[in-house]
Length: 274
Image (cartoon, rainbow, N blue to C red; front, side):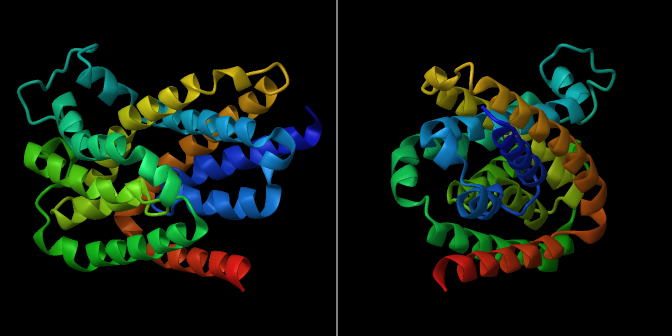
């Protein structure tokens, strides 16, 4: 371990924290920052670097748990809900929303890992995902009926889950697909964003923990300080990013993020293929 490794861990944690839950594709940003610039695999080793990326993702997830803490403990029945008789988002809504992508992810995990993780496929995901976001802003507001996450029905939760399957394509962005889908289904941007973040926690925790089980041997004394710096960095910047994004999304909507994605795709294309 040296100072440069800790600096790299800090930078990658920052990138992960700022982009994991914004609709801009954390995968696309990791390609530019790590694959093209920092190249953490060259000095950490590819397997340790891959483990590191799972660890910092958990840091981002922890930030969501902190932001929505009261919501989660209510949904789990650990806190009495004074509005129990009112319309409320339930754990069952989240489960219904997770089913489609969860099932497809398990069935096609090996195929996705083998055939879809490339720079070209990420470019496609960035651009097509941007077009979906533009369509959501242009057409979704016409039938808006859901102002808060507590008004989401099981049918809408399942429909958002179906649209979330698009995020299995690298570069598409989980939040980009689900927020766009929610808006197209009549949700406000804030309601769609809240549901997206809440729904992300169980599926990302499950996927990350399963991945870490197979990589546990890479938690060596040399690697732990790097993992710790990256985890803390991702947590802090994700916390800031989520709070800022939730305040911003209702005002600027999705099109500015879509334009940014297209510019990012153009930058990756120029660097990689020109």
